[in-house]
View 1 (cartoon, rainbow, N blue to C red):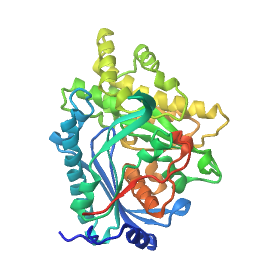
View 2: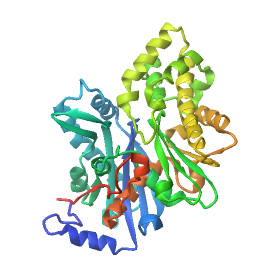
View 3: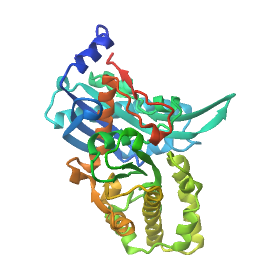
Length: 410
């Protein structure tokens, strides 16, 4: 394949200048979240930059991982099984997989590769350590995403922007959440205080008050979203089912208040923001512990699913109460991610946060399931334009920084 951008002759400065001069960039955003269900791809047109940027989604689709790749990704989450050689090899395997899905999205969108300016790839987070840790005399935070961007750029022939979290970590932040920048750019409102709630494997929120600037945002991870629910369903179905479709299992059960109170004692929920989390706190070890307690307590499996579903709702709603306790008004809530398709979560959340109104994010004119891949497209555009796109009030960074690194096809 002949690349539009020949790595032997293309000067990076000239490439950036040429892209900056365009009125609109066509960018593919690629995302694989903590649930590791598949690669979410969105083909986006991004016009303008900074707070004046506008996004149009041409095409979006989530490509489910083949069983063997998904199993291998879950091996990466296991600290004992994830040896250096497996991490190294899977980094390149996922790069190949991401590149393949990007090309597929281009074809399904009716485009050629020459018509795509950039790819923005988040990669797959396999470890996230937002607290300072001591090692070899150094104190640092850390985060690691795999899905080698050099492979993506090389296989597609399209410049690729990746490694979005690291610059924020170096600036003293947690590298997460990243979504607040998109929420500010697209959804600030003159009259209404809005919460943008993502419920993926981990749930996170952005609070955008009326007439907000970047300094006014509140954003943090609220705790598990679908991650624990998925783990419990996999356990009780022997892996036949991997998630609670539309919340049907939880709807057949009743939350157990003893178990729920026990789960809510986890120290993450009492921690102040900014804060972020992942499988390190709410992965398999957390799920095994609650399953052991539920077994000793003699709970039916539908009740266990109902309880961990209520854990997601309660930790989200409790976060809203903490925001409102600071005199911040919440008028509307817009939910994106896989949890938006869980009717039990959505119905319970509506009851719990009334009189605030709860909507599916798609009512704002953007597909709910494409939001995070849209974000990757926006962050890639901002990298090219040299605009800082972290939100220090959300991540705890000491300064605003430009996120991402640019990889040129070789």
